[in-house]
Length: 416
Image (tube, rainbow, N blue to C red; front, side, top):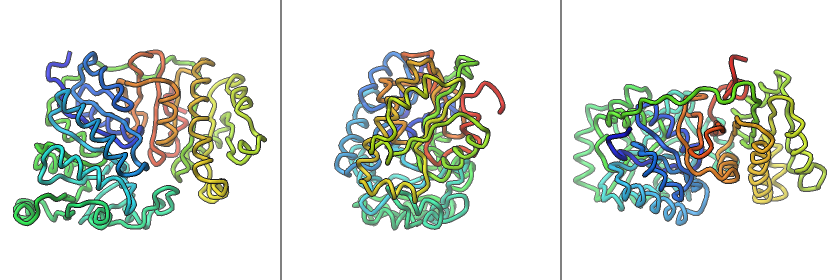
């Protein structure tokens, strides 16, 4: 039993970001619970978590709505006793001049009466690092990486202070070498009423150093990389191991809505192994040439694992979006949710989902509000065990996470 109470409350701006954060807090030894939105937080009184992660859907909504939702979650976490708040966002920052990271961080600093906080989007295990205020993806500056072609938030700037300038009311400063931190912090405190700092973070050792120096702040922000090092400061009490693969021998349902380059490679690798798959084509759906009933029949007829995917190249997506991006996403996300529900009813007990928006739609359709955290299917992609449906196991990944063989291995009975 947890004897410590809620030590840290994390607010993620989408569901896969939340599961990513939860996996690193669990790895740090904290009894961790992931909840979908603030409506599931009451379960914490029953599960007695040391770390709680609230997954919102606030990444791409208007900034004022993102601030309102985040503050509501933060106030609930503080009321439950959280001694520290962490705002989790994408490790590739996922931001535009009108993005939400700056406004949300400003609001959380005011709520916690923080003079300053950190921006730490690094996740070295997945190739996301920061040096001198510049964000890198696998050693390439963000604006030169495939993320520059992101369909919703194209990444055209690599410098975090520059990204923050049009978003935040506070100055954003890149920190130099650790030996200079004390002097830089003292100078900033003397000059600015409120500000944010961006430390270089390229290795796990950097993360440990940052956690030692700044881990006592009431508010921190970033990707999931720093959370493991922060979590270890609390000396968690997690001892129970959740089971590994669930219901061995039963097939897996895989739903891929992300159009990231990584997910495209994962789909291609899955198809190259001759696995059963059906491509969901938005144009045909809109024209009535492909139907939801046909997709349901494919699930019912599946003899083993089945992949349903709308993943496509950026060119194919842009072609579909000529009918309107909202029309396409408004069609695909709820459809994926309904297909997940039908898959569960058809006997699938292992469900793997690719894409933040798709994952959120699936979770809401399944009606699950809280999860216990199992082993990692990939770094930052844990097994999720619904608190009220122990027979079901899910793995929900950001589009950019996992290697090419992720779909072949996630929640599988053994090596492929």
